[in-house]
Image (cartoon, rainbow, N blue to C red; front, side, top):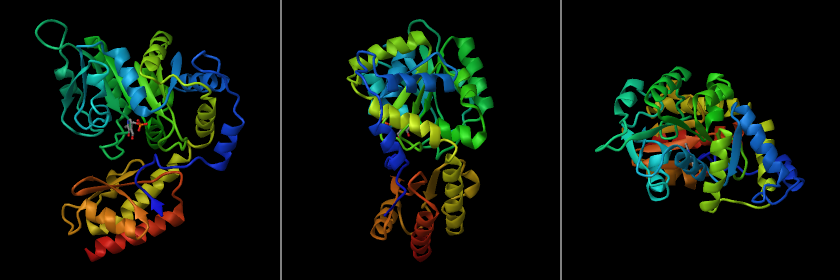
Length: 341
Ligand SMILES: Cc1ncc(COP(=O)(O)O)c(C=O)c1O
């Protein structure tokens, strides 16, 4: 089976498992797990922030960060296609008491002026804006990278309005590798970031919230309240440290394979390879006789797994567990299906 459903499907490598098995651990709720502390210090330093906090998932990391920058009854601005408002099951509202308002779904192609115009100042009767969320890279925007200049523009807007800027950086590593922007340059522009170790980087579990020491101290309390305080979690942090050491630069291979996949399928009119920036490859099946569920089912029968994002859009994701041989197999199967459709 070639599994191209997501970069979350990777299994820990042997070397990662060995690092996990030999990790020094302690009770992290008491604050004495040395491997977690090493991971948190390392990630904070990579992004040029004072502190970081390990969390069990990207969703929890995002939702903790949002509670840091938006107080209940106030507003978060995000894209209509942002993970924080489409795939986190209403957590901002139900857990954080946060009101969300969205700009149209444009993936990574943000319009700074449009976002600036949406900000509402404090004062009755409107809901005042407290923060803006940016997703880097953009999941429903098919792995698009928000340009550094756009983020700088948003930073100026946020400073002028006195609102915070949060980055859902689940795949910020891919943006760093695709555009060559240092992680610290991204870090300098955001008040809070969530970054994920288990998408693309190949760790089995784990995300971190990154920010100031004061915010991360508060984040530790929110994480406990949400049930995310973990005990001998250095076993998982060791996987994260291993991923940071060994699996960032190789993302360039995933990007190259995604481009190769798109180039191979382009003749069937389902994808523009010029739009593929990172590891996510959407297939637009609106002009094909096969819709997305039909393609997914037919490919699965032939040993290739992908997902239907929408009725006429399927998605393929390259990652650590897909080598050139597996990619060739996927291209052969998908080309055959699209050709015969
Ligand atoms: C952009 C983005 N943010 C956050 C998440 C949430 O991560 P998790 O599945 O670990 O909760 C995902 C998951 O795919 C994602 O793609």
